[in-house]
Image 1 (cartoon, rainbow, N blue to C red):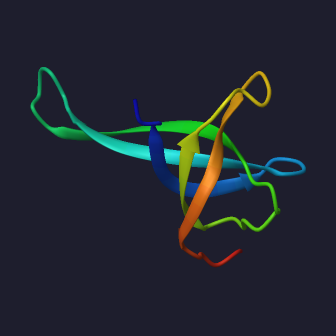
Image 2 (image 1 turned 90 degrees about the horizontal axis):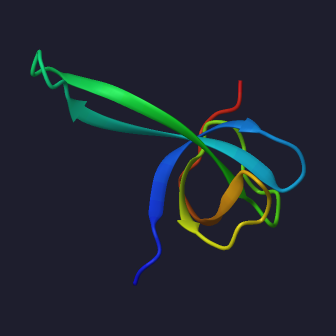
Length: 83
């Protein structure tokens, strides 16, 4: 079985070797049949502290590293500008 991959944008550097990533998905509203956005935040493990806010990344599922962190950085798709 393959491991789950998520793609999203880094919104926060949360401590040492950790980043918060927002993943956006588009779903059809059941009653109004309009496409709406749904968001979820994930904590990912960044071993080398290379991520910055605004980067678009791909993370892969791994063993639980803490209570809320169970994804690790796979690759950086695009670098963003930090405000």
